[in-house]
Image 1 (cartoon, helix red, strand yellow):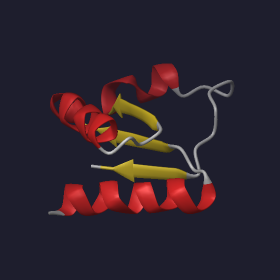
Image 2: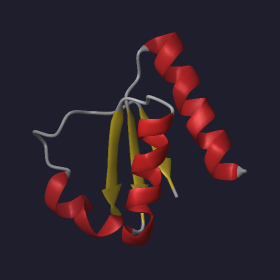
Image 3: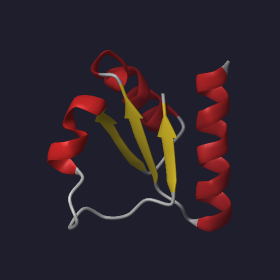
Length: 69
């Protein structure tokens, strides 16, 4: 239920404010979260914790909504 609620909140912020969501999660949950983004037509990106320091650089676009699982 918590994952579905987080996806619903992300969709509300997307619809109301145009936010894109960044989901940070363990590597084994990346596919699950990508499925939620696809299923609920959420704009955003899923990133495993192990990739955060390599991919979140100063040039990376900022996200106003970050979900941490």
